[in-house]
Length: 93
Image (cartoon, rainbow, N blue to C red):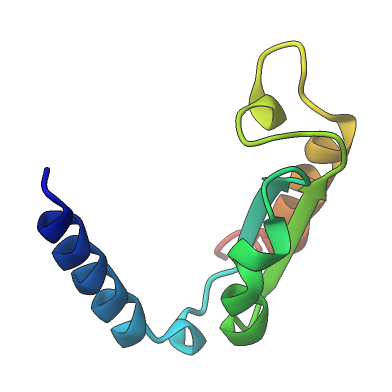
C-alpha cells in the first residue's frame, strides 16, 4: 500500500465518521477500554453524542489483556452484568 493509498483511505474513513449521527442511536452502548489505551480520547465523541453511553476503563489493562482468558478483571464482569441487567427490556406480554 502506498502513502497515497493510506491518505485516500483515511480521508474516506473521516468522511464516513462525519456523516454518522450518533445522536440517533437509540440502543445502549458500552465501551470497554484498558487504561493503557487512551480510553477517553477514543470514546470522547460517544460520551458527547450517544444518549445512553457507558464507558468502562479497566485500570492496569491494555487493549487485549482486558478480555484474555484467566486475566479478565472482576470489574469487567460486574460492569457488563450491571449493564445488561439495566438495559434488558422486559419480556413481551
